[in-house]
Length: 483
Image (cartoon, rainbow, N blue to C red):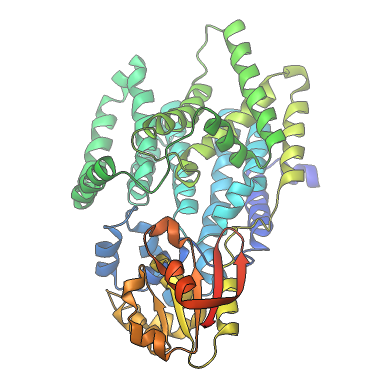
């Protein structure tokens, strides 16, 4: 009975989707809302036109915040609620991973690739985050599935083209790095003379439709490109080739798994060149280009304009898991499940469904509130933490601030409670210090974001440090009293 059930493609797809949802959903709220999540949640509460205007000034286009906007209206801003869309996107993604593997390689490749995706701690964290990256992964998988279908099958070709075009439009309205998926598809078709001739009309149509739909964001794209090229980004440039290994490590959970994955890929490459066939294996070519082109290109460009960041590489990871599953299954044809089984076991034993984001913002804020007494002055730096603080300090007020474009209402409320998010010591005058019984300073990477803030040096010079608390990889809390 079970074997008959598993023989049905729909059943396997559904099982993988359910497995992903349960495995990643159990600990969906275990991590604090932190990092850039408060930014997305806060701004998603604004009206649609304001979301488009505000997000255009940041690093991403506005599609995710627009989706979250309508979701929040229905389900609120709790940790579980705001992260549930990412879990749903991740679960849909694994279904398309399986379908790409099944339709264009074999059923085993689809299952193995799906399991690698489910068990990846990198994918767990992105499914646990109220940010755009799980959406990017889903749209990438949908786009590439229909790209495969379009160029390899005659049945339903027009439908595949339409879905591919619109999933690509949604992709580039989700994240600027998603343009690499369009480039991968275009380069592959143009590099094959038969495809170039056969699909000339479709290529022109796809480019035209995507360009027309993206026209409203063209000026923003150009501005973001010029700004990043001229002023750089907050991301650090790579240290060297070793960063390629460290990135594979992130995709595969642990050093041992990363080494095994790299060895498998290298062995497959050597085997290909030694036993090269005359027949063209287009699915293998596509999935290799899908992984390598963005991965290597973003690494090289990052020495001038840093962009080699794990989450920005989400578009490559889907192709990576399919490629890894395919070559692992192909290395020893007679025993084609041995190496994939080893891979899946390594992923499984190193997988952490409760993987930490190393940002206990909830704990840090709770500690400040536990320490704070009437008459205390609370300083918070960096000001990038202001929305995160408000989320846990008073969620009702957090929601009430959503129509205030400049956050003045939020700051006025916090200041009335003697809480001041600042980025330099001169923002607090001597009167405020003289009226304070104690000073509690929440330092959230203050020296990194604002190197000359002068806050701690001023406090050390004028007050006695009586206690401090450290929240690893996030913050320090200092308690000062008058001398």
